[in-house]
Image 1 (cartoon, rainbow, N blue to C red):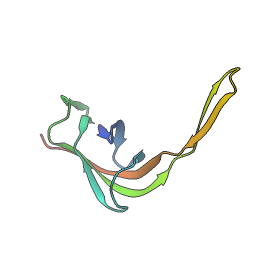
Image 2: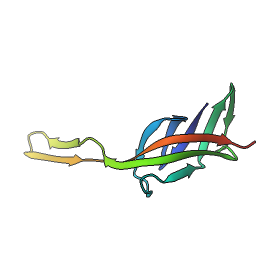
Image 3: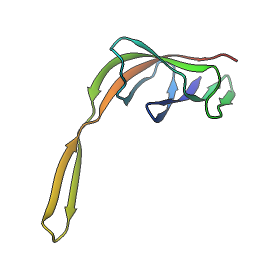
Length: 105
């Protein structure tokens, strides 16, 4: 059983028990969170596709922690103009574990 769920503007394919990193969520560590923006669910050979969301479907997850991702270096340069800019960025994320994928039909 798997689902495609929209979390913080990103679409992710999740299975039960997966550990995934999502953009920073406003939730405390150890808290339970439910996502109802489920776009697709596949279970027992049957696929339910939402228009745009599957009615009655939800994905339950536990927040494991928050952190910062690897540094991405942004380098801009214009040749022959003595223009160079170097900047770094570390995206914040929330690590979650998928507990359950539920659909009520």
